[in-house]
Amino acid sequence: MIKKIFKSSGKSIVIGITGPAGAGKSSLIDKTVLELKKHGYKAAVLAIDPTSHITGGAILGDRVRMSESTDSGTYIRSMASRGATGAISHAVRNSIRVLEYAGFDTIIIESVGAGQTEVEISKIADITVVVFNPNTGDSIQTIKAGLTEIGDIYLVNKSDLTGANQLFDAVRDFIGMSEKNPSIMMTSTKSNKGITEFAKKLNALITVKKKTKNTEEKSRLETELRDIVLNNIKTKVERMLETNITYANYLKKVQSKILDPFEAAERISKLIK
Image (cartoon, rainbow, N blue to C red):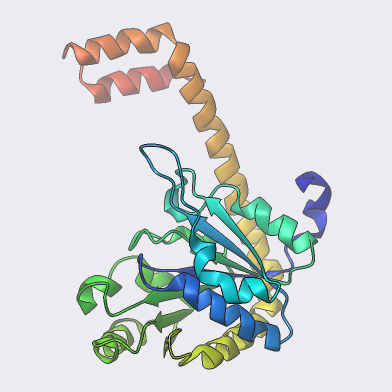
């Protein structure tokens, strides 16, 4: 099916919403989707939920906090991350294409609340929104690392809580003057503060991103092709190692401390063609 619809894909605007766990992303999306509808957009939501590294299971509970938008007809699909790196499920790209083919012009991705390393979403999204809240630790700890470089919009959510103004000032001081010059805003889903303004900013960005969509799509397809090729090679190598006698022999030498793992890996790698 993906092969059949691929040629017509790549026209919808993808909005990635990321940030630390507990930042209130699901509730924020619930309110924002309703506002986007007022601007004429038909939105769908892909909520990526963490997969347990122990059991392989996922709760898929994001939709619990999106009842208002669901009742109004918004399509919401929870997906397990299935151990994908960068907090994004491997199936997300194809899911976006299916939703696009189904007529959704705006697709929101809520990524796993994994924290500061959660930057892969920017490789898929046209617009990246990073959400913080006053309860995610001290200001410096909250806003450092990769998340400070990927956002088009930074939100201090749960702005009704103590410490929101201080966090807003910290985000503005550390990120606001960067080369990307992102927007920094305050929102509260509890009081509906800033939600309308946030949707207006998204609407303005969508208009801008539509003009550069074709160029950015080419770059994303290059990244996707590389990811698929590397993943295919990784799978082949893993299958080979499971049955390869030479690998088993080297493993025994490493386990017996006859050979260090670096030397063994280098010798094994030379055998792979």
